[in-house]
Structure formats: structure tokens, C-alpha cells
Length: 301
Image 1: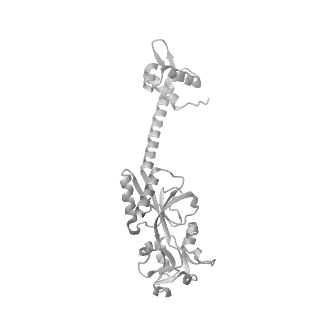
Image 2: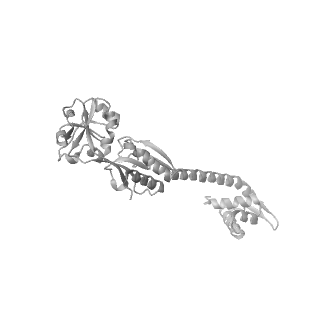
Image 3: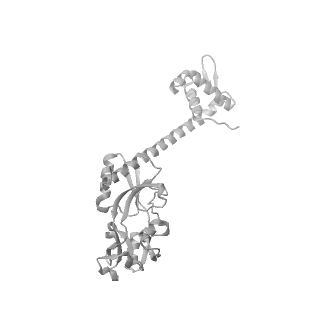
């Protein structure tokens, strides 16, 4: 026999079994005594046997009721624990924000400025920073491991996201200090068209094309000297002479560690560094962090 018993049925049954009095059980449950009696009769019908023995003076558990009671109490206790666990997770999600990044958002103190404004608005909130490989241009947003993320535009599937631009920076070219173009103060992008370039992985999607400046190549494909997925790989590839690479001004100190120089590039658009979040994520905490970014970047209305 299969019974479709609800938690309410077990809660009503346990209250009567523990009180052995329908009126006191009804008061404990904040329901009327007739409604409680009706619910118990329905449960007995589902069970197929009486759960209580009743007379004018006493209410006693039947043998079936006595067999059911410890199981009902255990189920109710486990359900209460489950509710507490779920409530804890919900509360944690309401006050914890995971911030993804594949590039440091330091950029002239913008990250401390964002944190200061955000914690002033939400002192109860906790921020968790998560470093994500360059293989994922959304820095954890696409796979849902981050709530907001510092990313470079353009993003793949842009309709899935919203963003606020945190910094707009010229793109430089990084090259070995022995490169013939290293002696110039700046270079035209046209002078770089035949150079081998360091490229992001294919998984970076439109971001790979952006850092190869495909839009400025007039249809000519880029020569790929090597693929890189981290700052360390980029630096090593540059020192090894595997190619040149475009990067934002704010990232120049990460690359110019010795043997590498950066030069201004004419003929390409500046880069845009942004704080992004999923378009369908309307949680207040996400919106408040985005507003803190707008304030820090000076773009808030």
C-alpha cells in the first residue's frame, strides 16, 4: 500500500499523540479542534486503521498509532533540520557575494574604492574573491560559480549579461626589449600586422579576437605565435620571443618585469574593463555591488 502523507498530517498526528488530548493539541497547533479531528480521520483513512482509541474521557494511541509515532517524530525532526539547513544557505546567499576576476581590478585603487562603498551600504555582507583562468572570458559568470565578475569587453553571449564599465584604458603592445620596434615611443598598428601575436585560448571567444585587434586588420588573419592563459605564460612567451601581445595600460606593470617593454599603439580602440553580472540575477546584493562600481568609476547618475 502506498500512502501520500503530507508533513502537516504527521505534525497533527504527533501533536495529538503527545498531548493525548484533541483540544490541547489543537491549541498547540493553532487550529480548531474540529479541523484537527477531521485531519486525523483523513490520515486514519489513508493508513487504513485507527491511530487512536477514543472514549468520552480518554484518548489513547492504538497499536498502529504507537508503531507510527516514533517514525513520524523522526521525520518531523529531520524535516526541521532540513529547513534550518536551507534557511542557513539562503541567509548566506543573501549576505555573501562571490566576485570573479581573471585580471586584477586594482587599477589605480578602484577595487578598494568599490569595497569601501559597498561595505558602507551593506556592512553585513561578505565578499569572496575568486581567481578564474583566462579560458573563461566571463570569469565564472557563465558557469554560475561567481555572482559578479570583473571582465574585459566584449563578452560572449552579451544578451545574457549586464555590466558597468569600470575603466577605459588604451591598449599597448608588449614586446621583447630586443625587438626592432622597441626603440620607438609608439607604433602604428599597421606596423604590427605581420608580427606573430600571443593569443588567448579559443574558449575566450570574441575576447580572443579583440586582443588580436581583428577589427583593425582589414580582413587579414593574425599570425599566432603562441596561446597564453595567464600573466605568467604571457611574460614567458614574450621573453622567449614567441610573439607580441596587446594589453591594457593597467596591466603593463604585470608584464614589464625585465626583458619586456610596452609601447603605445595608434589605430586601435581603447580597452574596456567592466563589472558584469547575469541579466536574470536581480538580487539586491548584486545590484548594490554594481552601484558601488558605478560610484567608484564616476558613472553613477
